[in-house]
Amino acid sequence: MFLTVTQALLEGFATTLELFIMTLIFALPLGLIISFGSMSKIKPIKWFVRTFVWIIRGTPLMLQLIIIFYVPGMVGMWARDQETTNVFIEWLATWKVMERFSAALVSFVINYACYFSEIYRGGIESISKGQYEACHVLGMSKPQAFFHVVLLQVIKRIIPPMSNEIITLVKDTSLARIISVYEIIWSGEAFIKSDGLLWPLFYTGAFFLLACGLLTILFNKIEKKLSFFSV
Amino acid sequence: MAILEVNELTKDFGSTKVLKGISFSLEEGKVLSIIGSSGSGKTTLLRCINGLETATTGKISVNDKVVFDSTVTDKKELKALRHNQQNIGLVFQQFNLFPQYTALGNVTLAMKLAAKKRPDYKKNKKSILEEIDATAKKYLDKVGLSDKLGNYPCELSGGQQQRVSIARALAMNPQILFFDEPTSALDPELTGEILKTIRQLAEDNMTMVIVTHEMNFAKDVSDEVIFMDDGVIAEQGTPEEVLVNPKNPRTKAFLNTYEK
Ligand SMILES: Nc1ncnc2c1ncn2[C@@H]1O[C@H](COP(=O)(O)OP(=O)(O)O)[C@@H](O)[C@H]1O
Ligand SMILES: [Mg+2]
Image 1 (cartoon, chains in turn orange, red):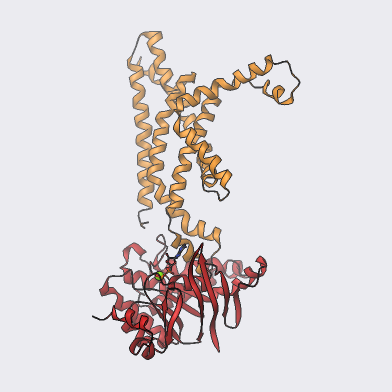
Image 2: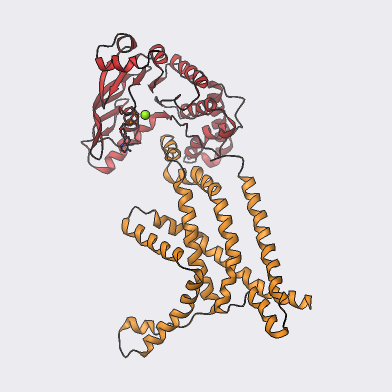
């Protein structure tokens, strides 16, 4: 039985990992773009981006999952009921319910990109003006200053908050359960119905612990690597 | 011939007038000290001259080449003028060393990045980089740090860090070197090594402008002293004239605060 359960949980865990990795792949760079937007010198861009980040960070991820999963389908249904030739409404009528995994991925990417963007912004803004000025008087260009002097300092500064956030992401993937994505919690829960067993659900915790443990080791390694200088 | 000429320079930050018409010139190989109370505009003056701030009005020439002229309104032209500003080095009060580079790396970084633009860079990469390292070592040796080449800033004392930053500025081969209170961030027992380094540079006839609160040092090392007060030059002359026999009552009052 233990083997059967483990195998089933591993299947669910594969989805969990896929969601985790895909979220990182998209949210890490998107967060950087959002952080540039929130530091933009163009006021409307800055305020638009900051308001968006405020909304995403100020509402539960679970709610965002539900909205992204259900709302497109509802909009499409409403649009199809309208008797109009309006191009925009016709376009809305093509909206369908998103595939479960995609809806979860979109929600996670948007949510985590916003959190990452704030970490990036904090890191970039924490570098003293003096670093840029020293580069300037030494004749370096702005991109040279950013890539050769500032960037590594920013990375060093943001590793601790990023590792926190990424470890939280591992566990947050379980929220995808709410829109019935077949991730590990779901696969553990299934044994309650099918075999009346509760322990497989508890057993899922071991998988999360393992994943978070490995990540902790990885981040500690990176921190050690960057400990040769202080910022 | 004057190597630096500043004409009627003013600088406003919003509605605050920080510099209210500064003019002076500096001969090649001379040392000018600028003294004055905190907030009198000394830092702003240095920053306007080397382009970290843009002055509001006035004209600046380095080596007879105009580097800033407020009557020029064309942005491209202003930018072209500014190119000549690179002849001025600056040593900051807070050092501003790059923490992730060793002492040697701090000195070589800008040179190595600049070398990438050389047409023969690809072909002679190795010898170019070796040459840069050798130049950097020469300057680090000059400031007495040849045994600290591989140390990161966090492994150096404040005085050593400031000496690395002096070597870094020197390695750019500046025609004029600015110091903005180079010892103010240091513990008193560490100021001596910096002052000694600057003295050596003066002996080598380096043209320097030094903002300092070390009056005895200013007296020894300078050819000329400017006392700044509230955005204007209140008194200017030889160290004797300004520091020993000041005429302006404000200079006297300022110097009195330094009497022990
Ligand atoms: N970026 C700035 N924005 C607004 N005010 C400034 C700025 N930089 C300097 N000031 C003001 O200019 C005055 C002169 O400053 P500063 O040049 O640093 O004086 P000093 O170096 O002689 O102490 C101060 O009153 C300071 O508050
Ligand atoms: Mg100052």
